[in-house]
Image 1 (tube, one colour):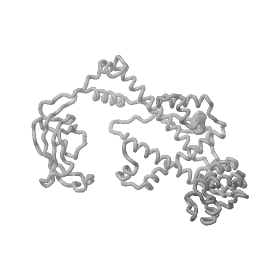
Image 2 (cartoon, one colour):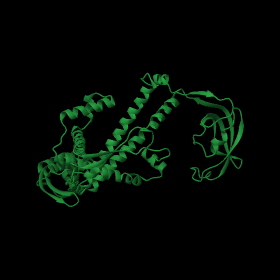
Image 3 (tube, rainbow, N blue to C red):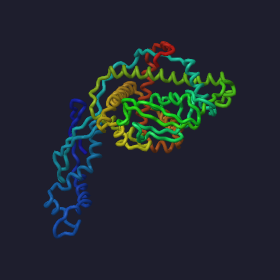
Image 4 (tube, one colour):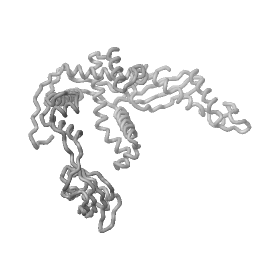
Length: 438
């Protein structure tokens, strides 16, 4: 490869012109002929036995040329980009200027490249940190969940109450005709859960096991089954059983049974501590995000659309993988959501733009401060990944791209640098009063 020229264009595009040596091109053309020559029939010759000169005469002198160029292009283009000192971030547009086995090949490539980033202020930034503390209601709610998980279900003698669990058969009718999907036997329904049509559960309250009765409801106007939306219906109910939950007492015995602690107070304190750690992480992350937003705001860069497109595609692929893990294809999911692939992909655009800008800004900070990941940093991260996924460290090293890992670790260290050089002003969060919004 010989780099002829590299011209920087506007909007982070570059035009590279480079040549492929004649000998390398000639050798590749011969390889293509040997593997693909049999695809071109020539009268008087058995399949694959016709001479190359005759095939080129019949089908064109360049019949093997472009496949040879395509085979050579990836490695030659990578070498040209490295020689030009540009980082390619999108698909290249290739023009073949000339191709000859005696003179070699000359290619002109127009391609989006990683932009030059002019970073603004990133040290000495000021940010306000809202400090949250665990409220007693949070601890009480967690204790309530512990009670619920350890409750006993007992049979209620008499009328069902809100909060009870009923075992029912039901069948729905509209104008005396049973409708599809409106029937079930021995259905477990928690009264007051709001999981059924409005008004249904309220009419089961007050009935006892063994009773048969009707429930009259009107389907919501926005009900998913259009043929039922907004229409009245009658459900025939047979109530088999009513159960209620008996919660265990909030005492030391509950703490011993459900935790590693001997007293309820110790258990409460552990819940408070765990929740406070989570709040502290959230508060720190909010500070980090606010600081990064300031750095982005002061950054100047002509970011090519190709970088956003690549990130969007990665996000769509990640989402598709997660959906497939749940037994659905992306097409099935989109059909269910009533979206096209284009609409779904476009929904990731704001997030993709933000993530690309964040990475460019933090890379610029790392470069400005000569921040790099040490071997100790890499070893620690490999160990963390291995522990998380219960894998051997050697296997993790085989699977990860170490250069990409080092870049990611340097970015994390750049964030730490920004935070450690920032002026963080703390203020206490306003306490929530009863009935206030979350």
